[in-house]
Length: 79
Image (cartoon, rainbow, N blue to C red; front, side):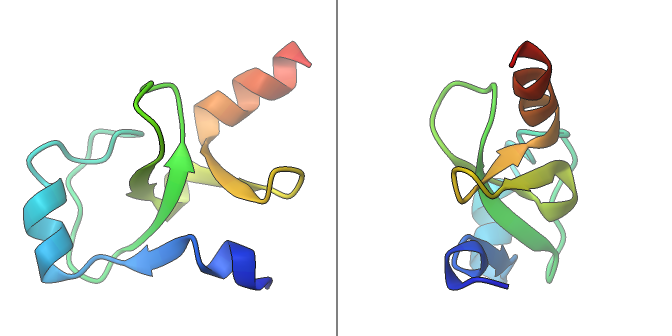
């Protein structure tokens, strides 16, 4: 795996858990759990990149960034 991709991944720690769980995951709405893998991704939420569950993201090799799944698939269909 490349360094650029790995730099966009992290594991939820206690501080992140307390900060992020009021809103939950922007991609799926579920709450985060301690030790869960997350990625920095863009999506249809319109406010820049956010941390979302890794399982809700696709890594786009062309842009070298993670994109929320439904946003990625919508973009592919429109291409």
